[in-house]
Amino acid sequence: MRIVGGDYRGKKLLLPDDKRIRPTSDRTREALYNILGHDNSFRTIEGPLPVGARVLDIFAGTGALGLEALSRGAAHVTFMDNHPESLKLIRDNVRAFAADRKADILNRNGTKPGQTGHACDLILMDPPYREGLAPPCIEELLAGGWLAAEGVIVVELAAKEAFEVPAGMEILKERKYGAARLIFLGRT
Image (cartoon, rainbow, N blue to C red):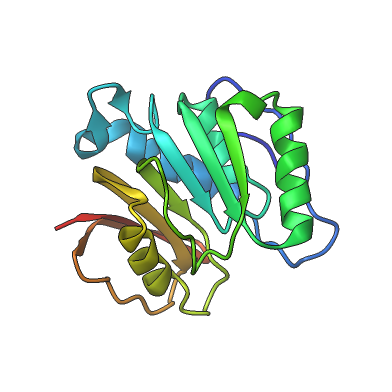
């Protein structure tokens, strides 16, 4: 598994030995960032997302989504996970990419992220499939001030997984890629 675009393009990611983590496939990550990079509705004054953005990679696993954001010009990424092996893997990947100064790693449960001091322009969420974690997590992120006023949340779910849009949010785009589905959300 490699970074598919930007400054770190082609750089290998460290992966877990077991199947506990399901990293976002290269194809799905490339599609996600192509949509952000080429759809004018996701442009900011800095350029296409994630250029210059503060990003949250929640349920980070290996950190692949957030490292891809850094590779493509994000100003800062906060990685959030609560599994000890995932946290070690994220730390090792961030170090391997020499991205320590542009990254924070938080040991927190994704469904209870708490408050933030810095709202994010882009939130990347890849919760375990078919556990219904995305809607309550989004509600907690909104309550904790994690999403900037014009921010975007991208959720990866199983292709046929049910998803109820949380109050105050709307679907901007939705795409399926094999076993995965990407849902792009913004505030109503």
